[in-house]
Image 1 (tube, chains in turn brown, red):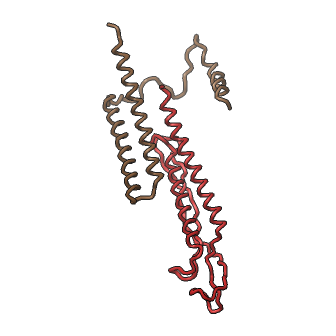
Image 2: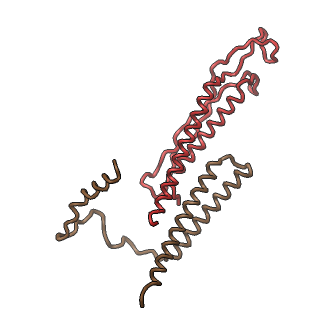
Image 3: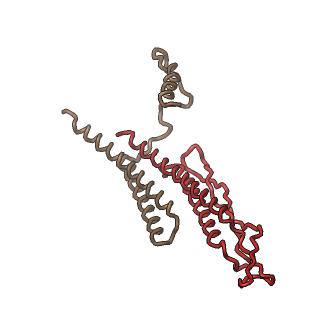
Length: 112
Length: 139
């Protein structure tokens, strides 16, 4: 199936929902109110946790690589896979940082 | 947190194929060994695999099936008998029992293990590329 075909089928399935004068169809299980109390952890804490996780991944990759290089382990693929995972995690946190800085700059451009 | 899901399965498969490669190497290395610790010529070793459940957190597929080496068994088929009276392991009538290693069969096993390893590496590479492309959505 071509990507365009799948997109058009998506529109076809979404067509019954575009009627705007009636009440919105209620999806089963979809409630707008939050299910419970919103956790009080702020964005800073979340970012902290993310940085810690990425750092742990880097450390794990480093220790696995060291084990391979020292001859303690022959699991070369584990080491390379750990490095790749650490790389992807790092890219994720770089993306988050970029987004954060972008929103900060957007705010700083506000006319007062 | 595991960003690249499914990569653990491939990692286990890589380890399993690596074990298989080691066993093939052992078979080829001992293709001429007529004396072992248990007596008699070397007997070819065969690797068999079994599934292994891998729990992944926060996923619809709560348990994925990975692979691991189930056991390494010994091929009990008789080896070739070679007439060589000068050999120290020759019997009274001058026959030496050689290992039951068939080099062409081992080469086929080697290539199969190597190709399977490559296939799993491709899965790893693709999973990583998928994650990297997802991160490039905002660019």
